[in-house]
Amino acid sequence: MNLFAIPNFRAFFVARLALNIASAMLVIVIGWQVYDLARATMSQRDAAFLLGMIGLAQFLPLFALTLVVGYVADRVDRRVIARAANVLTLVCTTVLAILALTGGVTMTVLFVVAVMLGVGRAFAGPAISALAPNLVPRDLLPTAIAWNSIGWQVGAVLGPPIGGYLYAVSPATPYLVAAALFAIGLVALFLIGPVPRPAPSPLSPWRATLEGLGYVRRNQIVLGAISLDLFAVLLGGATAMLPVYARDILHVGVGGLGPLRAAPAAGAALTALVLTRWQVKRHVGVTMFACVALFGVSTIVFGVSTWLPLSLAALAVLGAADMISVYIRSALIQLHTPDAMRGRVSAVSGVFISASNELGEFESGVTAAWLGPVEAVVAGGVGAVVVTAIWAWRFPVLRRADRFVAPPVSHGASEAAIMIEQQETRA
Image (cartoon, rainbow, N blue to C red; front, top):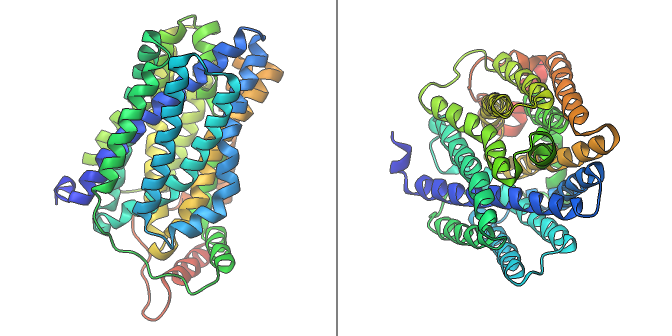
């Protein structure tokens, strides 16, 4: 069956593509402005520290709201949540555009907007992640995940260079274009029709939230997959230092920052396109761990490189390896999570992913302030390889995962309870 023959999936894909291009543009422009403003009065290490702080500013709302947004995503129409969160992001981008036109963008403004963007992402992430499996039949879910990843990665490929080149035209231009893309994404979200919704949990909000946390803790496949992403990317977050590399190490300026930021997404997008045709069908656990280790090695190569072509190649391999591991982790988590709990599990997964990204940027900024940018990136890559080895030993059920098969559900028992029981038995 052609996925794009399904109207809801088609609208969802358009929304993801537009929103991801705009988001990627915002990331590169805000990061460059923070570093550029800081370098006017600070040393390289102090400016790198502020790059980490802007990541922390986006992470804190995600962390603080995790339990709330997970419960909401399982109780409220997920389409409504995604639309409301996108409206907030659109407003933030429009404010930045107006301030850029009037010359009013300051460090304080950038940090306040970063916090508000974190709030929007806190609600949008679990809602969109939990919504996606409701749009297609379960047997098409791995293929849908691959196409969804293409939408994300294509946006990540196009957004950075577009943002960089538009910023060279004027500081306001990328914000204006991003606002238009967010508007397109909002329209596409409104085109998604009604989808199946899980029955509301009879538990109180607090008990329902604890149920979601307990499920993640007890399900070794879900816990292992989520936490592996957290610690590997947290340590191997080379992308946070890209403004430093573009300006002070590779000496390619804002024009070179776009390609550097796009290189990981380019490798990931090409890999995702391959995965839509040739899926990983056997030894998915071993393949995932191997790709996370390759991610760490590529980070090390990028860290020591002073030659732009080698740096771009290392980032592309990094993105390709990360794409395969994300594809496998996403499929396993979705297949091993009941629909009635997907909002809460997606919220927990979202805060782990955000921690690995935004908190990873903070970690990279702090480490760069202590050791230097190059040493911070190399140490992070080594750490990612070490974490991969530890997790492969600590979560044998994840390492032994062979195929994308959902656990069977016995008659009369809850899907969640059966999955927990099976994973505990296998472990």
